[in-house]
Length: 111
Length: 114
Image 1 (cartoon, each protein chain N blue to C red):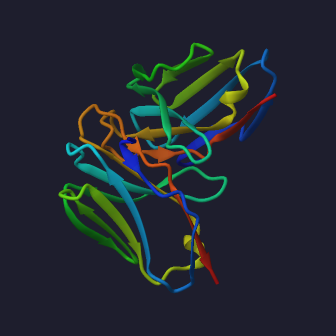
Image 2 (cartoon, helix red, strand yellow):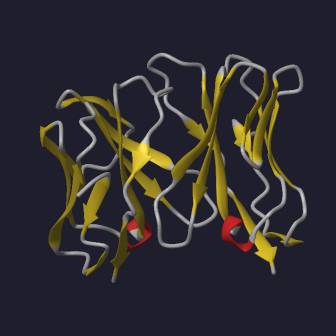
């Protein structure tokens, strides 16, 4: 079993839709959770960063962590074609432990 | 220039060649990382340098040799590579060496081994 599972997609939705991207994990010690966005031919860029459980909102983006279910989500409201990218989740327990990455979900927003 | 810059952007080499990848960060960070990204696979951490000292080597084959002359520059020296080494090689930096610190990535070097 992989430590972090992420559906590779592609996920294709119409412009304006609410998008839900998800990762599940197996290590209950994970406390730091990140979402990165990677455009084609570009490096990943940090989108959202959360510690422990709960929600965090930034503009059209909301990151949600459910530690009891070992499940994290990224919601995108009013999705735009410019949101088309691959979304990577990453997490770790903190300290000197490595970040553990999901394989990424490719998202396509159709105009 | 700002951010993390990687050169070259693309590299094609034969299995017997020797080449080097370069990474430079202008963010004043103290930690730098090399990752390998293959299609539909999670990022694989290869090496970590914190204040120029290597703190992580993830059982990477010796045909990959990192060098960190200072906190702003990171190199990956390549020799006698295999076809399965074809991938996108990403460099990243962070303020400190704790992996919960956000990492800033370059745009990568696309490496193809003939």
